[in-house]
Length: 409
Image 1 (cartoon, rainbow, N blue to C red):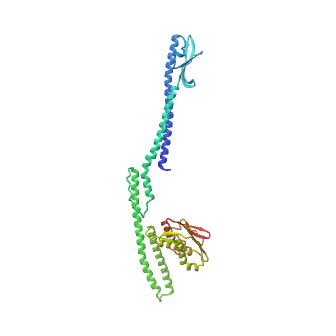
Image 2: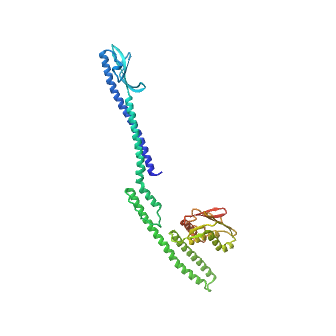
Image 3: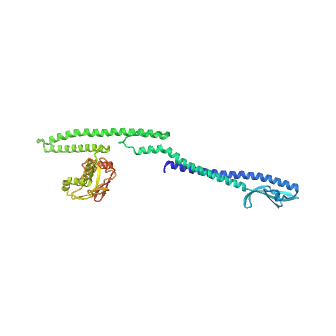
């Protein structure tokens, strides 16, 4: 639930509770004040009636006291005056009960006054209070809905800015005028963070590019010198074996440099050549290029290819298929099998191989490889980054006895 909605709910709930409590207090306060007023009026009326009785030596007749009703009952003992709630003609009333003497005899006199007018007034007050409560709640709702949403717009703007932040895009270009101090401070912090992240990213990018380029020159020199040494007929077999190890190591280092440079280009979207490609034809061509290696390991290839057209960089598409098919062959065993299935939704490449503990969550991370692998550990990372660049998803799973790589378009 959004913070503004939680605040609105809490404020309205507190308002309702406060209004209910205040309404109850208001009701009882008015009732108490009304009863006090009735008691004063009844006390005054009792005094007048008692004076009338003592003066005329008779009880007053009903028409002589229009606003009140009086009852007289003979009693033996004197009772002190008291006030009670009662009813008259099915309506609430207030009464005073006390003792008067007539001709030496005690009488209990009950003087009753109707509370109908007061009740009508209280009902009117209650209706007005209820109406004010409803109006207040509507006002709070509209205020929270309109005013608070407007106050939170800078926050949502900053949140969207963070969601769309990209190291490869422009940063620090969207400074909005914000009048709320807290959001203004947040915008300043985000702006500083963006500039710092962009600067560090550019430094890392420049270092990776330069390091990759600079590394290739001495590797080329080493390879060239090794080529010359290997052709020297005076070298012994031991020397040749050692040179071969050096040659293999330099080749691996060269591939590593090329892979790192390729990753930099993919991450920064520096490869712009895009063209329509018939993916099914490209797969046939790639399998044809690997035909010799496949036949050497006696691997059976099963294909089910539907015509699929995609628009990608031919260079990156070639690298993607090279990596996935190359892994399927390299990590397969003799007399194994490879299954390639292509349709408009996905490309599935499955190969038999030794069951291992490859972690599907880490297999696409850089330099993640099995102990037996002689690769650089960047092939699947490159494949994943190529897929991510085109909005595809590359997943791995082991379904006995096959390792399965699935590209979902």
